[in-house]
Image (tube, rainbow, N blue to C red):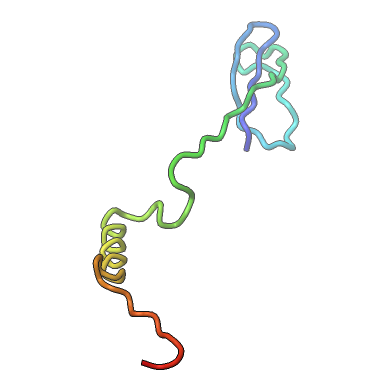
Length: 91
């Protein structure tokens, strides 16, 4: 639900209310019961931080360490020679 900001025309009180988008605007001030108007606000900006939004981004540090060790164990060791390419025509 969005947050709407209101201002009282009588006492100048400013306040916010969580309301459904389909809800009608408020008409009276909670302080003095005067008429209010709904203000236009800039809203909240969305800020994306980090490497992305993946399930692994929220895993525990222990899980990430175990996963890292597993990947390192599965990767070929540095300096190990790859199999020689096979040539057509025999040895």
